Image 1: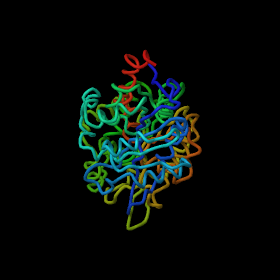
Image 2 (image 1 turned 135 degrees about the vertical axis):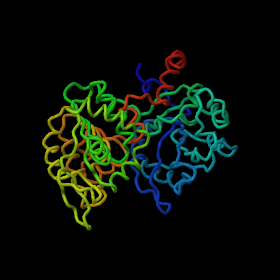
Image 3 (image 1 turned 120 degrees about the vertical axis):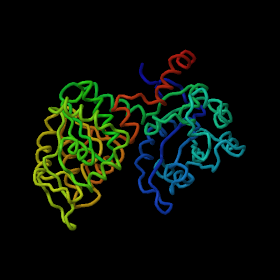
Length: 405
């Protein structure tokens, strides 16, 4: 069953609670990237005929950027072109009075939901529905809208707790993400997945899904992920690189990956050469001549040339994770050239996180069909896993809300 969207409900004049994800990098109290804020603007503009209250989080307890959402309200105000009010509480009497006083067209951002101790507890939707936050706020709203795709893999109170109690749909951002990522599997033609970065466990989830289900024609590995599979295939990558692999491997089983490598060797593409940092200079070294003394920072020139020619031949190209340390201008080449090649495929998808940042940094974002706002949620979607916050909405719409609206 499809996800219910704003098309399925009447929100004119109603009080609408919207979960957004405006979690952003913050340094010295300054928000450095507003991409996620911008992604919610279509949903918020569409709800101009309603009273809108926003739930959001910033970072998590213990982190330096775990802070209030005052600056976030200012950023949203600038992007939306109208004031977004802010209250530094979530469900206090003051917060409730602020919600009650809202007029049509006004937007109010409540405080960081992760300041509330029960927000991140692992509970079912029904259990979360009984918590103080949900119980205090539920009677103030006619509708719940989840537009926080990048958090949809988390079973948190603000994401799933209102669904059993309020008619719930997804916003335009979630709708766009689900459609775009679903096309990866539904589109006909040849498909290539380029998996890189440092998070080996994430890449392996996607790799297993697309290979075992026959979705991918080829899986190209780069970054630390490639170094791990080179190591498994017998290449001595040296102690310094082995340590990086060890730090980023998580719970990945060498035995299982050796079996995958053996079974799908004709579909898995590994680098032919690597680029290392040798006394501050980029040096490209063929694998057969690599002595493992230096840290691998990028794929090599020969590999870049091969992939630049190969990737555009595919109907669908999905990239997740950079090919190297793209933040260092000496090692941007692998990531930038692969992204250029991905853009030439008939349908191109860029995962969230670092690879999305790189795409914008190289000015290639307008050439892609879809750039995800999500890291973990995107990985789980491509891995074939269900996103809990979307499944709860789907379930309750089918058994509860579709019959009452």
